[in-house]
Image (cartoon, rainbow, N blue to C red; front, side, top):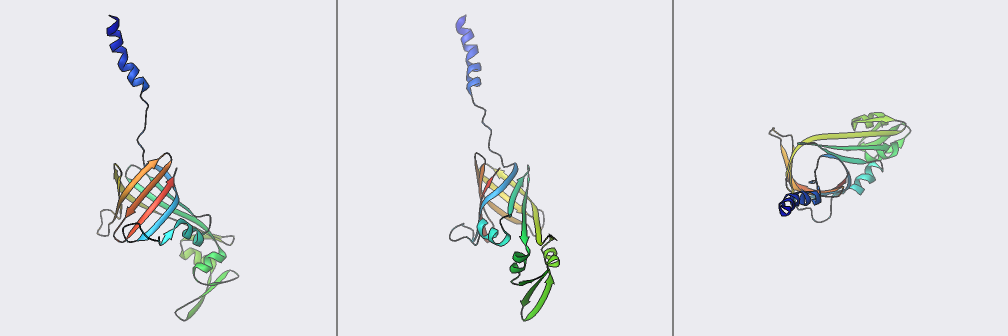
Length: 187
């Protein structure tokens, strides 16, 4: 009779010792900690853009995030750019609250608040706050991911690639028709 109790107790002991491991999930808000964008679809050679080169343009406040839901991805960027940086992005010279620049032999002097507004930003206290986001659809199966911009239209753009999560770090590589991007993100 005791051996029957032992057989009944074995499954309980087996399941009690089994660790509850969650499958890694993309769902949630991730912050980009490294970014490399390449011309071509192989993510090889020298990147055209990196997080460092973007920070050199937009400043140290640059923040890139990806927010995954069950089937949508929202990529967001925010930065706060000084008046000097804003004007230098146009290849201009700062003159008080204006930026003087030349294009194709024509000279112009544009107020910084208008220049910031052209970049879809908000200008205050000699700084341009720029935010941008786009929502895309995605699907992921095992280690594969497909991201689609303008889904359901004739202008749909599809990127495919791979992803993996180790701890709180997501690494993802996606390629489209003419470029490839490597991301490292953290929660």
